[in-house]
Image (cartoon, rainbow, N blue to C red; front, side, top):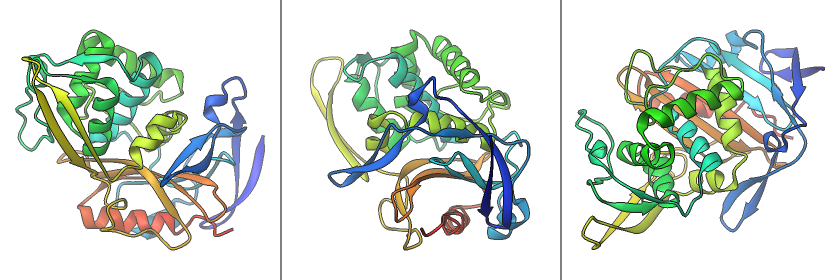
Length: 313
Protein backbone atom coordinates (compact mmCIF):
# COMPACT_ATOMS: atom_id res chain seq x y z
CA UNK A 1 0.00 0.00 0.00
CA UNK A 2 1.24 3.50 -0.78
CA UNK A 3 0.13 6.65 1.02
CA UNK A 4 0.82 10.27 0.22
CA UNK A 5 1.75 12.26 3.30
CA UNK A 6 2.75 15.82 4.00
CA UNK A 7 6.08 15.75 5.77
CA UNK A 8 8.62 18.37 6.67
CA UNK A 9 9.46 19.08 3.05
CA UNK A 10 6.22 18.81 1.18
CA UNK A 11 4.23 15.81 -0.02
CA UNK A 12 6.06 12.49 -0.03
CA UNK A 13 4.79 9.04 -1.07
CA UNK A 14 5.64 6.44 1.56
CA UNK A 15 4.92 2.73 1.35
CA UNK A 16 3.98 0.63 4.31
CA UNK A 17 2.67 -2.82 5.01
CA UNK A 18 0.20 -4.00 7.61
CA UNK A 19 1.09 -6.76 10.03
CA UNK A 20 -2.38 -7.87 10.94
CA UNK A 21 -1.16 -11.28 12.06
CA UNK A 22 0.36 -9.70 15.14
CA UNK A 23 -1.85 -7.15 16.85
CA UNK A 24 1.06 -6.30 19.14
CA UNK A 25 2.35 -4.06 16.38
CA UNK A 26 -0.72 -1.88 16.75
CA UNK A 27 -1.50 0.52 19.54
CA UNK A 28 -2.86 3.86 20.54
CA UNK A 29 -1.98 6.05 23.48
CA UNK A 30 -4.27 6.35 26.48
CA UNK A 31 -3.77 7.73 29.95
CA UNK A 32 -3.71 5.70 33.13
CA UNK A 33 -3.44 8.01 36.10
CA UNK A 34 -0.52 10.36 35.49
CA UNK A 35 1.18 8.01 33.02
CA UNK A 36 0.40 7.66 29.34
CA UNK A 37 0.39 4.06 28.16
CA UNK A 38 -0.33 2.20 24.95
CA UNK A 39 -3.19 -0.08 24.00
CA UNK A 40 -3.59 -2.20 20.90
CA UNK A 41 -5.35 -1.05 17.73
CA UNK A 42 -5.00 -1.73 13.99
CA UNK A 43 -2.05 -0.11 12.25
CA UNK A 44 1.10 -0.97 10.27
CA UNK A 45 4.83 -0.50 10.21
CA UNK A 46 6.63 2.19 8.27
CA UNK A 47 8.67 0.70 5.44
CA UNK A 48 11.53 2.70 3.92
CA UNK A 49 13.65 2.32 0.81
CA UNK A 50 15.58 5.49 1.60
CA UNK A 51 15.50 8.62 3.70
CA UNK A 52 12.44 10.86 3.65
CA UNK A 53 13.10 14.61 3.47
CA UNK A 54 16.69 14.26 4.74
CA UNK A 55 17.60 17.84 3.85
CA UNK A 56 14.81 19.24 6.02
CA UNK A 57 15.72 16.83 8.81
CA UNK A 58 19.31 17.94 8.55
CA UNK A 59 18.31 21.56 8.99
CA UNK A 60 17.06 20.78 12.50
CA UNK A 61 20.57 20.32 13.84
CA UNK A 62 24.00 18.81 13.40
CA UNK A 63 23.61 15.17 14.41
CA UNK A 64 24.30 11.97 12.50
CA UNK A 65 20.80 10.47 12.35
CA UNK A 66 17.24 11.72 12.83
CA UNK A 67 13.88 10.00 12.45
CA UNK A 68 10.22 10.79 13.08
CA UNK A 69 7.59 8.09 12.59
CA UNK A 70 3.80 8.33 12.73
CA UNK A 71 2.95 5.09 14.51
CA UNK A 72 -0.78 5.03 13.85
CA UNK A 73 -0.47 5.77 10.15
CA UNK A 74 2.68 3.74 9.58
CA UNK A 75 4.34 6.75 7.95
CA UNK A 76 7.83 8.18 7.94
CA UNK A 77 7.59 11.95 8.38
CA UNK A 78 11.33 12.67 8.27
CA UNK A 79 14.56 10.71 8.33
CA UNK A 80 18.26 11.32 7.91
CA UNK A 81 20.89 8.55 7.75
CA UNK A 82 18.25 5.99 8.69
CA UNK A 83 20.32 3.05 7.42
CA UNK A 84 23.76 4.13 8.66
CA UNK A 85 25.24 1.64 11.13
CA UNK A 86 25.76 3.36 14.48
CA UNK A 87 26.59 2.43 18.05
CA UNK A 88 23.33 2.41 20.07
CA UNK A 89 24.81 2.84 23.56
CA UNK A 90 22.02 2.31 26.13
CA UNK A 91 19.30 2.35 23.49
CA UNK A 92 20.33 -1.33 23.52
CA UNK A 93 18.34 -1.68 26.72
CA UNK A 94 15.10 -1.29 24.76
CA UNK A 95 15.81 -4.66 23.15
CA UNK A 96 16.89 -6.09 26.50
CA UNK A 97 13.52 -5.09 27.94
CA UNK A 98 11.62 -6.37 24.90
CA UNK A 99 13.19 -9.82 25.10
CA UNK A 100 12.75 -10.01 28.86
CA UNK A 101 9.08 -9.04 28.71
CA UNK A 102 8.39 -11.45 25.86
CA UNK A 103 10.15 -14.49 27.27
CA UNK A 104 9.89 -14.11 31.04
CA UNK A 105 7.51 -13.03 33.79
CA UNK A 106 7.80 -9.76 35.76
CA UNK A 107 7.73 -11.67 39.05
CA UNK A 108 10.71 -13.87 38.11
CA UNK A 109 13.39 -13.70 40.82
CA UNK A 110 16.83 -12.75 39.50
CA UNK A 111 20.06 -13.43 41.39
CA UNK A 112 23.19 -11.43 40.63
CA UNK A 113 26.46 -13.18 39.81
CA UNK A 114 29.93 -11.67 39.73
CA UNK A 115 29.16 -10.50 36.17
CA UNK A 116 27.39 -7.42 37.61
CA UNK A 117 30.77 -6.11 38.79
CA UNK A 118 31.31 -3.80 35.81
CA UNK A 119 34.53 -1.83 36.00
CA UNK A 120 34.39 0.19 32.78
CA UNK A 121 35.07 3.86 33.52
CA UNK A 122 31.96 6.01 33.46
CA UNK A 123 29.51 3.09 33.29
CA UNK A 124 26.17 3.87 34.94
CA UNK A 125 25.59 1.42 37.80
CA UNK A 126 23.00 0.93 40.52
CA UNK A 127 25.48 -0.89 42.78
CA UNK A 128 24.42 -4.52 42.52
CA UNK A 129 26.59 -7.09 44.29
CA UNK A 130 26.98 -10.82 43.77
CA UNK A 131 24.13 -12.64 45.52
CA UNK A 132 21.70 -9.71 45.42
CA UNK A 133 18.15 -10.68 44.42
CA UNK A 134 15.26 -8.77 42.94
CA UNK A 135 12.36 -9.41 40.58
CA UNK A 136 12.54 -8.88 36.85
CA UNK A 137 10.02 -6.06 37.30
CA UNK A 138 12.37 -4.25 39.68
CA UNK A 139 15.35 -4.77 37.41
CA UNK A 140 13.46 -3.47 34.38
CA UNK A 141 12.52 -0.30 36.23
CA UNK A 142 16.12 0.29 37.33
CA UNK A 143 17.51 -0.46 33.87
CA UNK A 144 15.07 1.62 31.84
CA UNK A 145 14.69 4.59 34.18
CA UNK A 146 18.24 4.92 35.48
CA UNK A 147 20.00 3.07 32.63
CA UNK A 148 21.91 0.87 35.06
CA UNK A 149 24.32 -1.37 33.18
CA UNK A 150 24.61 -3.89 36.00
CA UNK A 151 20.81 -4.31 36.01
CA UNK A 152 20.97 -5.13 32.29
CA UNK A 153 23.50 -7.89 33.01
CA UNK A 154 21.30 -9.19 35.83
CA UNK A 155 18.37 -9.41 33.42
CA UNK A 156 20.42 -11.09 30.71
CA UNK A 157 21.68 -13.85 32.98
CA UNK A 158 18.34 -14.32 34.72
CA UNK A 159 16.26 -14.56 31.55
CA UNK A 160 18.76 -16.11 29.14
CA UNK A 161 20.58 -18.44 31.53
CA UNK A 162 23.78 -16.65 30.60
CA UNK A 163 24.74 -13.36 28.99
CA UNK A 164 25.69 -15.27 25.83
CA UNK A 165 22.37 -17.07 25.73
CA UNK A 166 20.47 -13.82 26.16
CA UNK A 167 22.48 -12.10 23.40
CA UNK A 168 21.46 -14.90 21.05
CA UNK A 169 17.84 -14.22 22.00
CA UNK A 170 18.30 -10.49 21.36
CA UNK A 171 19.77 -11.05 17.91
CA UNK A 172 17.11 -13.60 16.94
CA UNK A 173 14.37 -11.23 18.07
CA UNK A 174 15.95 -8.34 16.15
CA UNK A 175 15.90 -10.37 12.94
CA UNK A 176 12.34 -11.53 13.62
CA UNK A 177 11.03 -7.94 13.75
CA UNK A 178 13.00 -6.88 10.67
CA UNK A 179 15.98 -5.21 12.33
CA UNK A 180 18.41 -6.95 9.99
CA UNK A 181 21.18 -4.34 10.19
CA UNK A 182 21.60 -4.81 13.94
CA UNK A 183 24.03 -6.94 15.91
CA UNK A 184 24.18 -7.10 19.69
CA UNK A 185 27.22 -8.16 21.70
CA UNK A 186 25.91 -7.25 25.16
CA UNK A 187 22.66 -6.37 26.93
CA UNK A 188 23.61 -2.88 28.11
CA UNK A 189 25.19 -1.09 25.15
CA UNK A 190 28.72 -0.59 26.44
CA UNK A 191 30.93 0.01 23.42
CA UNK A 192 32.04 -2.81 21.15
CA UNK A 193 32.89 -2.43 17.47
CA UNK A 194 30.60 -5.37 16.64
CA UNK A 195 27.67 -3.95 18.60
CA UNK A 196 25.63 -1.77 16.27
CA UNK A 197 22.23 -0.86 14.89
CA UNK A 198 20.65 1.73 12.60
CA UNK A 199 18.10 4.42 13.24
CA UNK A 200 15.48 2.51 11.25
CA UNK A 201 16.18 -0.71 13.15
CA UNK A 202 15.90 1.27 16.38
CA UNK A 203 12.44 2.39 15.27
CA UNK A 204 11.44 -1.24 14.68
CA UNK A 205 12.80 -2.35 18.06
CA UNK A 206 11.21 0.50 20.00
CA UNK A 207 7.91 0.03 18.16
CA UNK A 208 7.89 -3.62 19.22
CA UNK A 209 8.72 -2.73 22.82
CA UNK A 210 5.94 -0.17 23.21
CA UNK A 211 3.38 -2.87 22.58
CA UNK A 212 3.94 -3.91 26.20
CA UNK A 213 2.02 -1.78 28.66
CA UNK A 214 4.61 -2.41 31.36
CA UNK A 215 7.34 -0.99 29.13
CA UNK A 216 5.31 2.16 28.50
CA UNK A 217 4.52 2.61 32.15
CA UNK A 218 8.18 2.28 33.13
CA UNK A 219 9.57 4.67 30.52
CA UNK A 220 7.06 7.33 31.59
CA UNK A 221 8.25 7.39 35.23
CA UNK A 222 10.51 10.26 36.37
CA UNK A 223 11.74 8.26 39.39
CA UNK A 224 11.44 4.88 41.07
CA UNK A 225 11.97 3.54 44.60
CA UNK A 226 12.24 -0.10 45.61
CA UNK A 227 13.65 -2.53 48.15
CA UNK A 228 15.63 -5.62 47.12
CA UNK A 229 17.69 -8.17 49.05
CA UNK A 230 21.38 -8.85 49.50
CA UNK A 231 22.92 -12.33 49.64
CA UNK A 232 22.43 -12.53 53.42
CA UNK A 233 18.73 -11.66 53.09
CA UNK A 234 19.00 -8.11 54.39
CA UNK A 235 17.00 -5.40 52.71
CA UNK A 236 18.54 -2.75 50.51
CA UNK A 237 16.63 0.34 49.45
CA UNK A 238 17.22 2.05 46.13
CA UNK A 239 15.82 5.20 44.57
CA UNK A 240 16.66 6.19 41.01
CA UNK A 241 15.74 9.11 38.76
CA UNK A 242 15.22 9.14 35.02
CA UNK A 243 17.97 9.97 32.57
CA UNK A 244 15.30 11.36 30.20
CA UNK A 245 15.43 15.12 30.75
CA UNK A 246 12.05 15.71 29.11
CA UNK A 247 10.47 13.87 32.04
CA UNK A 248 12.16 15.82 34.83
CA UNK A 249 11.40 19.25 33.39
CA UNK A 250 14.93 20.25 32.38
CA UNK A 251 13.84 20.36 28.75
CA UNK A 252 10.38 21.01 27.33
CA UNK A 253 8.70 19.62 24.24
CA UNK A 254 6.74 21.92 21.90
CA UNK A 255 3.42 22.93 23.43
CA UNK A 256 1.33 20.72 21.12
CA UNK A 257 3.30 17.57 21.96
CA UNK A 258 3.27 15.36 25.05
CA UNK A 259 6.37 13.26 25.68
CA UNK A 260 5.29 9.94 27.16
CA UNK A 261 8.73 8.48 27.72
CA UNK A 262 11.73 6.95 26.07
CA UNK A 263 15.31 5.81 26.48
CA UNK A 264 18.59 7.65 26.48
CA UNK A 265 22.00 6.35 25.44
CA UNK A 266 25.44 7.89 25.80
CA UNK A 267 28.97 6.64 25.23
CA UNK A 268 32.03 8.26 23.69
CA UNK A 269 31.63 6.11 20.58
CA UNK A 270 27.85 6.50 20.23
CA UNK A 271 27.59 10.14 21.23
CA UNK A 272 24.30 11.24 22.77
CA UNK A 273 21.19 9.32 21.66
CA UNK A 274 17.49 9.42 22.50
CA UNK A 275 14.35 7.58 21.39
CA UNK A 276 10.94 8.88 22.46
CA UNK A 277 7.29 7.94 22.39
CA UNK A 278 5.15 11.09 22.17
CA UNK A 279 1.63 12.06 21.16
CA UNK A 280 0.01 15.00 19.44
CA UNK A 281 -2.96 16.96 20.75
CA UNK A 282 -5.35 14.35 19.33
CA UNK A 283 -3.56 11.49 21.08
CA UNK A 284 -1.83 10.10 17.99
CA UNK A 285 1.47 8.38 18.87
CA UNK A 286 4.85 9.13 17.30
CA UNK A 287 8.32 7.67 17.64
CA UNK A 288 11.21 10.12 17.35
CA UNK A 289 14.88 9.20 17.33
CA UNK A 290 18.10 11.21 17.44
CA UNK A 291 21.45 9.41 17.31
CA UNK A 292 25.03 10.56 17.69
CA UNK A 293 24.61 14.13 18.87
CA UNK A 294 27.80 15.85 19.96
CA UNK A 295 26.56 16.73 23.44
CA UNK A 296 23.50 16.71 25.68
CA UNK A 297 22.42 20.23 24.81
CA UNK A 298 22.52 19.47 21.10
CA UNK A 299 20.63 16.22 21.63
CA UNK A 300 17.69 17.87 23.34
CA UNK A 301 17.65 20.90 21.08
CA UNK A 302 17.54 18.66 18.01
CA UNK A 303 14.91 16.37 19.55
CA UNK A 304 12.74 19.40 20.33
CA UNK A 305 13.06 20.37 16.68
CA UNK A 306 12.04 16.89 15.57
CA UNK A 307 9.02 16.95 17.89
CA UNK A 308 8.08 20.29 16.39
CA UNK A 309 7.47 18.49 13.08
CA UNK A 310 4.60 16.50 14.57
CA UNK A 311 1.34 17.77 13.00
CA UNK A 312 -0.78 19.87 15.32
CA UNK A 313 -4.07 18.30 14.32
